[in-house]
Image (cartoon, rainbow, N blue to C red):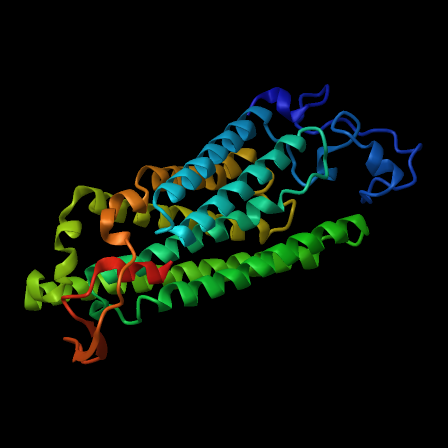
Length: 349
């Protein structure tokens, strides 16, 4: 971040020199953003401690991320259209998440001149990106064989997207309340607490998802060792599982999950200390642990888009005939006849 972005005072401090408040109705202790003082307050007049951040957000950096997320959103839209609705749910989730990122970074660009610009969109955007990831695991379970999973392929998006929605509501409500509390000069503590609760629940949801995904991988490997690949895995998707594109997608999806999870942990730590905590005061923490890692996650999913990596395994078709069978660990599951088509995958998005 350029030193000019910080607007230092004549002493070389990162904080502007105190201003004369005698012409304003509010005391310098706390600022009502709807008051005469707040309407006239600019970075040139006011102290950095009066703003949501303790720094002036860099125009260049935030513009770059706004452009990158905008490009990613367009790519997801084009890729979704090209896939002929096979990945409709994934497309909606990723486009919505990237669009919110663009709006959020536009807010940070505006915050270069406006101390009170709201950036709540950046808080809730990754919830949509996580929803896209949840949908992908549902497909992966079907590709390897449903009998390897503790829960059904359909259950993954239902359970985790429901939890995602709850965390989204908490974060959005907390952000709106924090803004209103600031305007009312009561302090944004309750709103901040709600945002932290929503983010913490999102961390819990993603951690549970990661544990179940690891459990699925371990169970799959266990069945392969016991029964061999031919008997342990769904034979209809053998060619797909061997493709480098699909293997690359599995790697990218795992990395994207860990990146978004890391971001959520950071935001919990950041906001748990309030709006003037040690993490929120430094722009490089935000750029490194929010902007960069989320951007890498979405661009990788553009590059290894599931419609490309899954190929024709995403096409819709007849439903499978079901039978009862018992897995190697004793749980009864629904089996799939070999004559059924791979088009059942459509059911999970």
